[in-house]
Amino acid sequence: MFCTQCGRKFGETDRFCAQCGAPKAGADAVSPQPPPVPETDPSLDWRASMVPREIMGHPEVRARIEAVTGANPRGMSAEQFYEFARPVMAIAGAGPVPPLKLIKDISLPISAKLGMKTSRDTSQGFRNTFGETLAAVLCSLASRSQPLEDINEATNGCIIRSKMLSSVWSWEGDLIITLEAKDEGTLMSAAITVPGQLSDMGQSKRVLKALVEDVMKYRDTPAGG
Image (tube, rainbow, N blue to C red):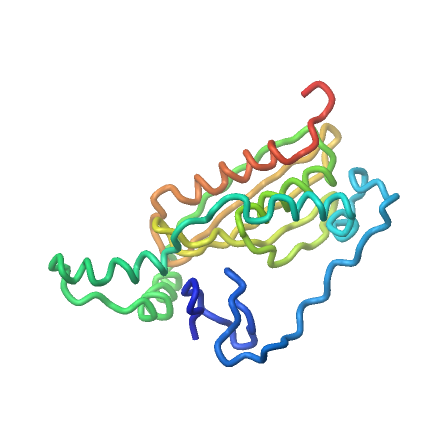
């Protein structure tokens, strides 16, 4: 089943769309929600913390995230664009246009199994603490409506799983962000993979560039700039 609002495919146990939040047709009106991130003691120095849940749960970080959520309009998704384009393509003589479900559920998985994919990565160092950099990354994801799927602690840092949302240039991609605390600050590495697609017309490059720019904007300015 697909979301009637944005076209994203629902998982078997999904009650709400992971992309736009719309309820799944036929789902119960009141659905269990994932447990909220526990609020951190306001007196904790989240900037010096190396624990993601402490940083995410701090009132100051929560306020920062809430203030920028949805600040950057995401535009039209690939699914929406394709549905609009189908009749135009047919009129233009492109021949029978396969339905979206055929492409997403059959063509893309087959292409992915054949090893077709688009991959791009970037790295950027920041003269900020791990806590400050993580808070800025979370603000970036929230401002662009990119889902926070998972965050795991790692040695001297963490690994964040998110998504590059689909657009008129690309299908949805997997976004992995790694933060590693260094003596001089924090190293952020990010990679996007779009399985089943050989080219995304530069979209993954633009998304990674925007991530770096967002972190520069939302981070605390270190001493000396």
